[in-house]
Amino acid sequence: MKILVKILIVVLVTLTTTSSDVFAQVPPPPPPAHSSTGNQPGGNAPIGGGLFILMALGAAYGGKKLYDRSKDNLEE
Image (tube, rainbow, N blue to C red; front, side, top):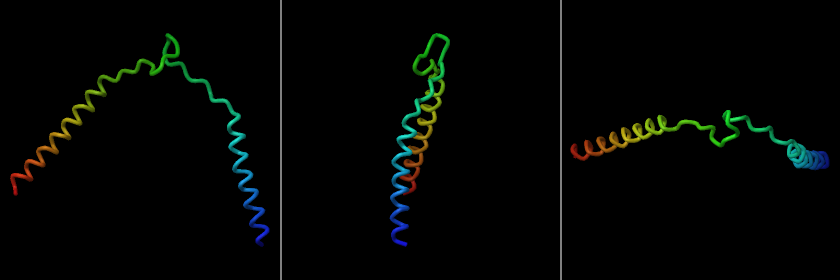
């Protein structure tokens, strides 16, 4: 029984280490084209609207935290 377990461990370790070598030989797929002018990083994605939304949400969250803190100080 102990010999069977040792053989099984050796087989599993061998399969695990060699399978990563097999997958390493596959080349990555080509990147998709981002725009009509060529392959530009980022693809000219607009971030202005989302940035302002995140800033507004952060300001509102910070304002609520300050309001809650001042409300707790007034109650004490």
